Amino acid sequence: MLYEIEVPPAAQNAVILLHPEDNVAIARVSLPAGQELQAAGRDLVTRAAIPAGHKVALRHIAGGTPVYRYGNVIGFATTEIEPGEHVHTHNLSFRELDLSQLQAEDLPPRPERVSRSSFLGYQRADGRVGTRNYIAIVAASNCAAHTADLIASSFAEENLPPGVDGVVAFPHGEGCAQSTGRDLQQLQRTLEGVLDHPNVSAALILGLGCEVNQVAHYLGQDGSGFPREDSVLQGMTLQESGGTLSTVEQARQRIGRFIEHAAKEQRVKVPASKIVLGLNCGGSDSFSGITANPALGYCCDLIAEERCTVVLAETTKIIGA
Image (cartoon, rainbow, N blue to C red):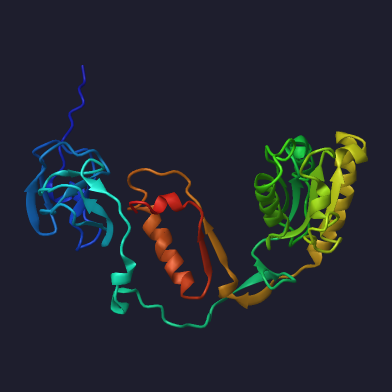
């Protein structure tokens, strides 16, 4: 019979020190109590079992004083913490920093810089720039979601002309018996963002016809003032078009004209400052902040120096770094 024997890590590689000024390190693997550690020029021993990815104190941390990770304050000790102790929610809390106490020299420098780099993008009429050129089919409600998918998938095997990156559907589960007021307004803002996205050359807004979230809103027929020109934004409903199959066929004809329009658009040289980079979490574990996140952060720093825009979608990931 074979047995798996768990070999404890060596003292010098049991933990990961993220910044020389940190007073905690990260357990690379699960550490038992009594595990010898070497970090930040110190020799110490764990006082309790430390789960993989969790924090262990490297030196004495007085109650009420900051805990540093990545060289930044991530919280404050709620009690006295001794070297080798497990640092987690039982002895670490969050409170607002008093930013008024920060001196100018404490803030990272933000040198003025004009973007010198460039890329080839699709210049839109409002000054924004797309990195792709898609045709979008946006469902106004869940009632039209399946048909939107059918329309997009009908182009899957077609050879689109150069400069047209694809025909894509945007289905969702809202809009039919949607509550009026802020709930509906948020949905409309979201869909407007897709219809008017710089990566979208032209779009079709598709409804059933009787939903709360009416297609008319996106065509400016309710006074919203939203629509772009008819050549790049049009609307349809299944009820007016004679059902699902008829709608798919009529939509394909309209999208055919969209494709002709998109194929005429050419990439032009534009400053890198026109880039807008969106970040979102693909799945977190204890080591995301040690591996992928710093790499993305470094990338964002580089493009921010070019006056680009970076948007962090999940702000909850900031808590505790």
